[in-house]
Length: 260
Length: 345
Image (cartoon, rainbow over all chains, first blue to last red; front, side, top):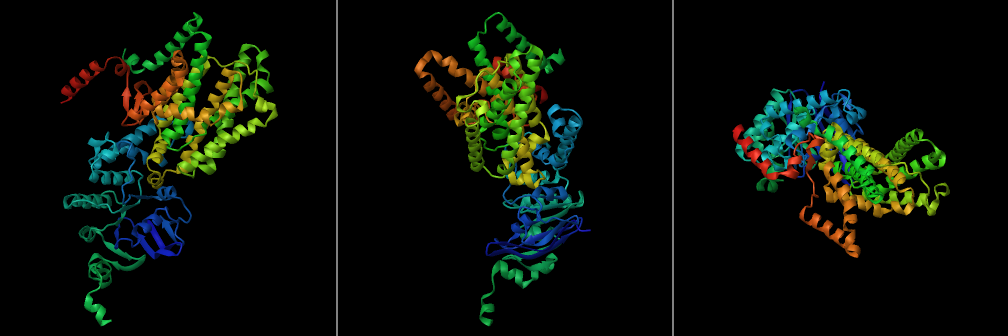
């Protein structure tokens, strides 16, 4: 069964059709990428896949469950997590608290237990702290656990956002430009991070990325968007050669115009 | 000894109560001082309640006196009109007073739910306008309700609140706020404050947690209202105008928004300060205003923003824990820290 499936989704903002007839299907341990020039509708697709926008047509399935009309937190419950193009950390909380915050919806004590600190309050709090610390250790952020998230260096903020998304124990993780603004050295780190998420943790990963070298290196399957239309899709080698993709990125050659 | 060091608050709080009782018994605390201390307690509960919404969840409620009015009138209605409590012996009197307080809190919480349900979807300024409007609507309704005295006000409410009950509820308010913040509920609310969209995509049901914070806060405001009614013995709708709401906002922001200790000290100090400044006569409120201005100019996060009493034992990261040492001997503490660092290296 596919963990994430979008079945011919489209979205219309007034007269503008931002995304038209987009379909994708991810199985476990798939690593797909969406590429396309600026304004192609990539982030809009992500926003639909995570419930921030409701598609005007088509249906999204998470773990086989149709998600029409669901709020973003219900998508998260169903097993979906994402990061954002412009980093959205909880800046006034520490690194550890950022990860603990992501445990909220799985916490198993009620309001009364919380107020009186009875029931499984103490055991749950202990579990949350331990699991969060473990996750930070796996991704080598444990030394910075008491830093405010806003004081982390840029690269580590991106990393923390990914770790925080993983704390919700998703089946699919959607990464919106994880390597934006990074130098080649940092990009290599991101590549190995994404590989670990897929190979060691067994998550399905969907990324949006502008950095072609990275996309061609890690993605197994690529979808290319331009003006909301899927203009090409396939394996990296195929997409790389596709004249339509080259055209959307670089424009047509001058003599091609003349011949038409 | 070690137990005492780690649980100093369990000894210190009862001691403070005993000390207050002794001071009152030997007449050091006169009626004037007593009234101020009681009002300070009421204001502390209100400021803590406001802190849950404005500080922890980051929503702007500027009509909190409305919830206080609901609690005050409902509880006074209960003790004064439905059961004429003043003729009863002490024990049923106290029991009914506590019951009235809880009922006042519950009705205020119900109002909080009814207001919160449709409006907490709004953000920022819109919520502020709606809560402001709610405060005024409550006042207008009380004005035209004859059996609570309408515009004349409600007189002859039995004086049932005393220092003990008020500060017991202050301690309870601190306890509730502490437990709230150090739990998944508080963390969810703080996540919403910092970034609502990110919180939502991480599986936090934004409107649910906003409503939980709002209703808890309204309940506390209702309890504070009941304490207020049974301290002042007289209620008038104009007491609960938006000016009253603004007072609590001032206490909160001067004390330190988001900090339990800040709300506590803000409510306490700023209730007492105008009374201390009384010797300045007409200049009193000018100085008061100037002090507030200085606080906000030099410490925009409030006097105790980002700091908490260490005896609250908050586990949330990134807060500066204030112990007795901070207040008494800074030098000693710095020395101690330096030596601790050396040994760890």
